Amino acid sequence: MPATVRVGVLNDMADSGPGSEAMMDWIEREVAILRDRGLIPYPVEFVHAYGLGLPSGTAEAIENAYHELVQQDVVLVVGPGVSDNALIVAPLAERARLPTLHWSGAERARGRYTFQLQGGSHEEEPLVIARHLAGLGSGRVAVVHDGSPVGMRLLTTLVAEASMLGLEILAREALAGPGEAEQVVARLMAAGPDGAVFLGVGASFEPLAQELRHVGWEGQGITNSAGMAGLGGTSAADGWSYVAMHSEANETFRRLCSDAGAQITNASLCARGHDLGRLVAQGIARAPDISREGLRLGLEQVKWLPAAQGEEGTLLGFGNQDRGALHGRYLVIRQWQNGENRSIG
Image (cartoon, rainbow, N blue to C red; front, side):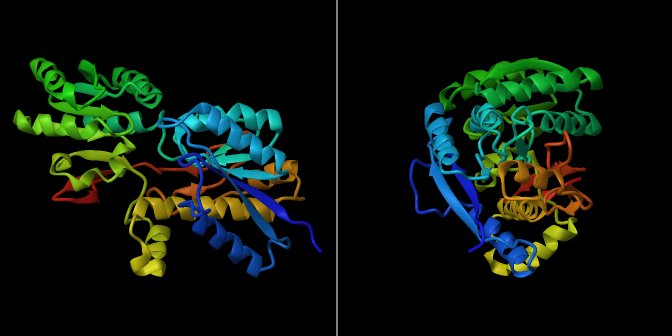
């Protein structure tokens, strides 16, 4: 009986479940492809752990779930998917010397054993936003952010990039809930901006956009990847641009959609699942042995795979000292119009 590759799966958005995490179908699909080709000669077993993490749960739940996987002798952990939780897991992975692949936006949650498939980027999304506004000639900008660690990190990065581009940030406002939107918008409008930016995890976006529409503001509005979370379902988002991670110009993405047909209901999630599954499967296939060190080396050998996310030419891979999987123009500007979104370049 050959040895078994035990892969831990950390679900940080539930405290229990039947093992039907959103990414699992994609991971199992890509592993099965390489197993069928004989490139993975070992059985692969997935071990699940659950912890309702931040923002609705606790850091302790994530720590407990990760320790559970460590104790079950997994050689690779996949997850978590939320940035705050990835920052919790990163030092645990380094102490356990256990390769861990998360798919959050936290670039800071990288290390010798901590790999990232970017789920957006706290450092690069603000750069894309600032350069987009500058390209449109919006030089006077108002910024609204939520008070989460994600919102604050995005704000810090945006301010730094705006200063490089000569964008003037006229006002900065924190928005904690819908009841504050009227007062916040009144202060923003007093500054006379021609561009508005929302930064955060998305809960405060809709009341902000609704109030801006209510007062008749017609400037350019843009948000970070919070815009991927179904905000097009409300008319308040109409006309707003956002940072996304899928593009119809990407040949790998188009082929993925064609192969899956009607099964594709969430384009960005499917593209991310495809890329995550390929990284896991290729990392296992390229590992010199099925130890934790072997899986770390295997992930480092994954290079130059066409990504389904980003613009055409975006590549997946890692390397020695390289822990960010996506290389190239993996962030895309899209815009909501009449309940639908399109890439605007």
